[in-house]
Image 1 (cartoon, each protein chain N blue to C red):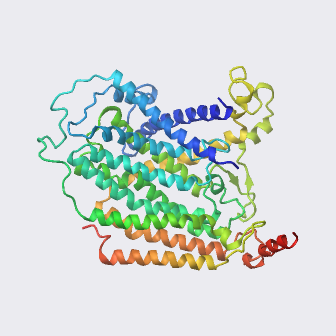
Image 2: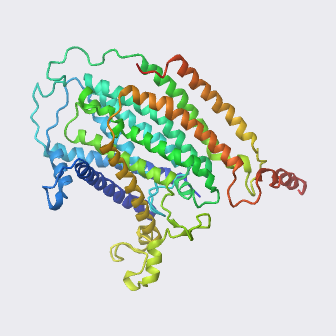
Image 3: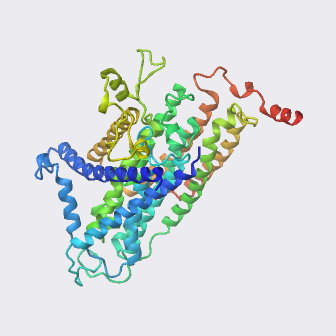
Length: 404
Length: 132
């Protein structure tokens, strides 16, 4: 087994464990937060402060009896929770979490991600259809209509940072504010685009103001009415992981990714100081040595030398990861706050909002961004209209042929 | 940078996710009690016995919406390569052997987005986006 493959497998295992734990504790944090917002106590019985509640929930879900409806299409019924979960889960295979901390560094990550988020809709639609029951069927149709309506706005808002940075890779887009292409005027389009993205992400994952797929007063539980036990658990699991993934995407697209900069003076137009590697700065200040010196990794007697380098974590990797997680946590808590604050929309309001407001606004934002990129070039560039002053490379081509 | 390997890792991660699910399902199947009965296996219909087929007729507006979506979605995906290459097309790049297009690139795309907006206005006018 090559060191590269082993690294990827170990890293994938760590990612998977972290994601599953994150899902379990997100449900707990959300319940505690909702309780806090509504002046209740929330789950606090299992373990200290109720911290073992997710474990209890998991054990209960696994031990529950499973009931498969007689009429159900068995193969699709089995497959749809897997599709719904794996599509959301797979998004984290594309999203870098810190500098060097990623499953893959694909140059077209944004496009692949859009594809995966559409793929998740198949799971929900098939779940409703294969149950062969009326409520799930209606629920799946609703889900389908909702997801496709907001997918357009989602794609269009993602285009704004893509146009500004000229890249589809998260590592480039994350550096948007401090990269060579930055101009403060771009905030005019980035702010509304970020807001639209959060709304569209809410709708895509079926979070509260847009949780019409699971509108219990109208269609019982929507597409997962007929699911029980572990198969049922896959749907909320996919939903929470999708919420985490969309927060991660929003951080990369609109909040400067895993970078951290502070202004050097009160005048914000001055160049900002890069403190992305704050752990490294701290380590330099304290002066760790010997076994404590970075990079940190598993004990050397456990992991042989060729593997160790790729499994270890540098201070830069650690600090960027922590920064990224902190930014993500802010967005996830915002999603939860929104859930506690806003009532559910009516279905026609939902459709009107998506098609008559989000879609045209998204198109106008793309339009404005391209205008800004052409007529408000990066602040650092020397000429206003750069495109005329560049040397014409075509001449060079002719020269090459002439010299032969 | 060789990036073909990177796509394999994404696929591997997806596959790994599906495997984790398989393990969870298997574990649940081993541990949980299984006591199926006729009434447990009936489809849920608010307590009444479900009559007829579940795949009922439903409103045609879903079809219209799906068609409008398909049209716009393909167009949005078409905008993506343009967006990624936009800066390059307008300004060009050092050591890259092609003539930058300048603002012409912008106007050409505006025609496309304009047609898209026209299509949206037409759908709006025809009531395809209404949900009554």
